[in-house]
Length: 410
Ligand SMILES: Cc1cc2nc3c(=O)[nH]c(=O)nc-3n(C[C@H](O)[C@H](O)[C@H](O)COP(=O)(O)OP(=O)(O)OC[C@H]3O[C@@H](n4cnc5c(N)ncnc54)[C@H](O)[C@@H]3O)c2cc1C
Image (cartoon, rainbow, N blue to C red):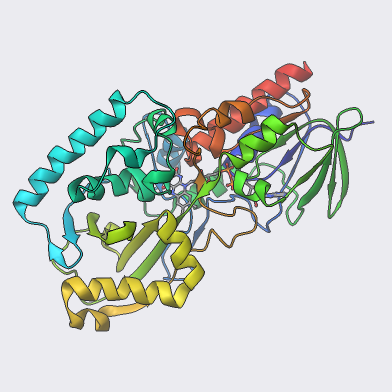
């Protein structure tokens, strides 16, 4: 007496990919989504600046392996090759000299080698960085701005198993808009949070605000952060292995604070990477004037991002504006028209940006990838393999789990 073969929970990149895979395999499914839109953490909007802006994912990472890259080309998206680097650096209010930049390049190589050579999976990334500020400046990309957690909360083993994300492409029309376009042909029930997943009878029964759906199997793509906040409950409870894995894959936070800056370019070029290094990991990165738009997109990550989002948008915009003033002078303020701040911490269906394993817990990813009682499969960016944390990884994970479920159902 099942309604469909598979119920899929969450219509982000992973859920949409699972649905497309099941459809291709001839399986029936119902895809339900708590929000009033598809895409999840892939979301482009033009309401703030009158031009497309990605609130969530923006870079098409690992374009040579990223299934969204050919989609972007086919859709005629405007693509710009942009691998994160460091064009301009300030240590606080002191501009780094050419000699500093040279030392930084050496430190970058040293850090990369130390990570590659490191064997003890229990160690924290911070153990390799210490107090050298050249290493710290580099490690801001390895840590808060990339893994979205501070280096002392990053498992070296988890970090090591992430693939290099070059080549990276940025789009004018928006990565979120691309994923929306790609997913538009999938039937989705919106505004339909799943509340309880029962697996005490045959198959599964998912209780939602729009009734109960019965299926042979479920694919759950809810972010680990939202699962840890009981965005979905399970009856009976999940096995301890899976519950522990969810808590061992907490969300990191990456926060964008874009400023609309008009009437000046500060002698910067479009797509320049600018970093203002602070103490206590209060680092602030700017992607400068992408596509020559009047935007300087500030980013903070890790613990500082949680602090700034807690302080609120006004405080965030004020802080970032103040930092620009501190390096470019007080005239700067009159060029800043407006700003906004993303708030993934307060987003109840995400509770953060993306997952990173706790030090010593890198195995949590493979544990969570194991099906529960051949009825519940998890998918999403946390299970994205070498492309973990990325939209491409989420899609690949959805496809992988979709195939596994289809094969299981026969
Ligand atoms: C600020 C930021 C910047 C990023 N930058 C990049 C980048 O540049 N490049 C990149 O590749 N990736 C980036 N990412 C990561 C990328 O956005 C994610 O990895 C990817 O979008 C996750 O897809 P997903 O399907 O796993 O999860 P999600 O997109 O979160 O989809 C899960 C869905 O489940 C829904 N849901 C939750 N609870 C329930 C429930 N109880 N019932 C029903 N539905 C529910 C959610 O609403 C959501 O739509 C970024 C993320 C953030 C936040």
